[in-house]
Length: 70
Image 1 (cartoon, rainbow, N blue to C red):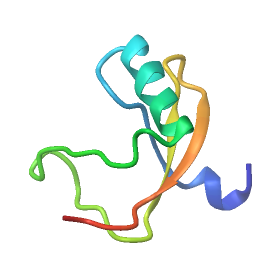
Image 2 (spheres, rainbow, N blue to C red; image 1 turned 120 degrees about the vertical axis):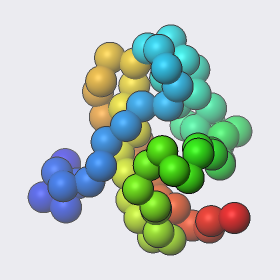
Image 3 (cartoon, rainbow, N blue to C red; image 1 turned 90 degrees about the horizontal axis):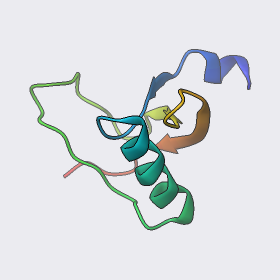
Image 4 (tube, one colour; image 1 turned 180 degrees about the vertical axis):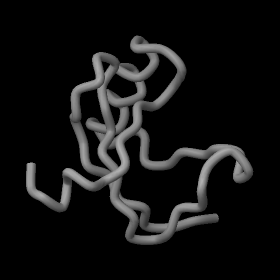
């Protein structure tokens, strides 16, 4: 991990370790390429923002980047 990665936001998809692993698997295979959330629940994201995706055990597994917002 680079110094840049140490400062990135980290999160896991879903609301359980099992769901985090299942959704991460879809990201890693390229099947999941988008996500959504209530806009009032989180700070706004920006195009180019990078985040670390964690697996169900809290381990970093992927680096994603926002490429579009609709």
